[in-house]
Image (cartoon, rainbow, N blue to C red; front, side):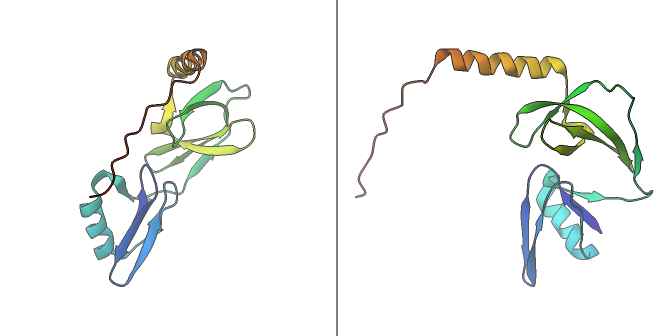
Length: 141
């Protein structure tokens, strides 16, 4: 059975070994191991069903900007260079200035969300550095 991590990397250990699951990189596991992992991990891992080969399509000749959320929660702008579909999932190949990134449809965000993030970041920068909190150190007894 093919499984992959959903939001971030996960290390799965069992008595005979271990495996590291990363979003976007499905891994083949024996059915009993995969079922046990899906039951224990909840929504952190999902099963990948490959019913049809992936379909890649060229986008419109003059594509619009799109906005997507990075793993660290930052919303980034980019230009769509390709569209893809694998089963029921849709993917967008985004050029973000220096590299290309495959972004799944649930990571896409709106321009309004990106602008809101930019305003929040500008407000934080205008305030300048905040005074450091005094840390109370307690000696061990």
